[in-house]
Length: 282
Image (cartoon, rainbow, N blue to C red; front, side, top):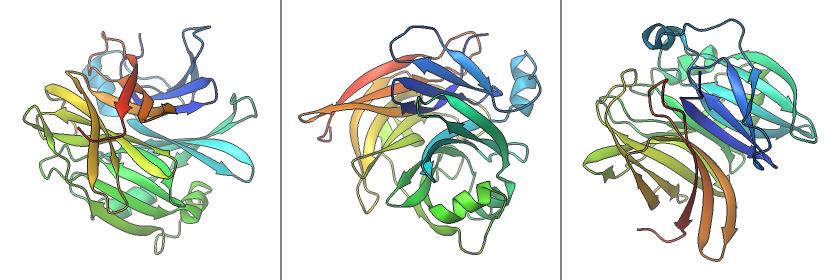
């Protein structure tokens, strides 16, 4: 089965790490193309082959977050929280060559249980460390069309990963963000990345207003948020659902990002795209 539901994307040195929402693995892809990719299991057991059965019980890992803690580089695989069975994640430790050292399961249900009553149609799709906080992006592809930036206390998030959730202080703010339409369909957050203290995001225009059922994809966009969370669209792509975003390089007034797609079809492999955007809005 090809990687067909690429979602969270992180670049660590010359390696890319991809989370797929319908796998029990993270996928490692070398930047030099020396091999196609390698899977690393983060959840036990196997998933059904058929799409409908697989969708019902998949972990729905949507966000990959890079965190440096106590001199170690770690990746957090975070679930969408859109269903009661989509609350487990994983913590992956990397060595100095960015290779996997250890992987441990994480129960994010205590955090998701405090977010769910506050956010209509909860569906976490991206995350990053920004301004010394842990931010999660809520994708507003439900009926409420509620895109938002969730700010969490970073130390409290790390303590929670270790099993010590302080739920009275970890949540700092939930701020709604109004994204524009693309080809007549609202854009909704799918991933984010911090670059030089700025928060960049990917967003998809997918019809249907449902966090579970897939809709018609009109295209996607890359943008950034200012300190007041006002969005600026930097580039767009037609007929592709971009679900993962990783910074690649910067030169003059151009930024290069790596993007991974999700075609919502197990027979269509995810694509890895290199996109160049202007630092000026379109």
